[in-house]
Length: 116
Image 1 (cartoon, helix red, strand yellow):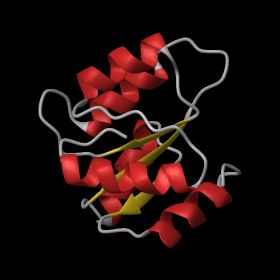
Image 2 (cartoon, rainbow, N blue to C red; image 1 turned 135 degrees about the vertical axis):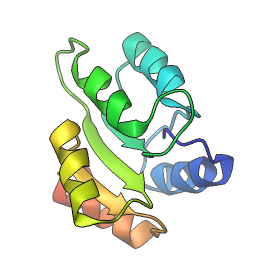
Image 3 (cartoon, one colour; image 1 turned 90 degrees about the horizontal axis):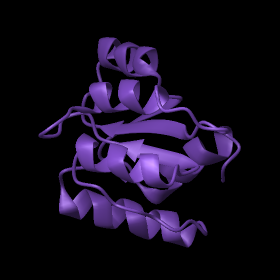
Image 4 (cartoon, rainbow, N blue to C red; image 1 turned 30 degrees about the vertical axis):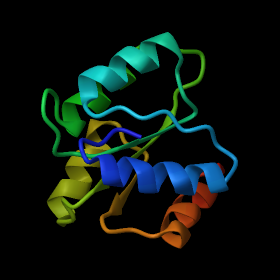
């Protein structure tokens, strides 16, 4: 869970735990990259608008890390315009969910990607 909002990280973590995942939180892209280099997760949920490094740059750098199995990356952001979605997917994200989202919406995204 990569988001500068502690509240969003906690809500997302609660949803992830209810689905059987062990969530790890980071408050910005730099912190998340360091964690991913140490232990690549199966799924990354990332915000777009963050200090230090925005979500687009984070996803580009994440995709450049050599790993046997690339993580599924989902943008969880308030940037919901069509151009934003295209840019996010173009940067390397697998899917996109617009804030605010609920557990059902996140579950549906993960199930669609074979991770539910």
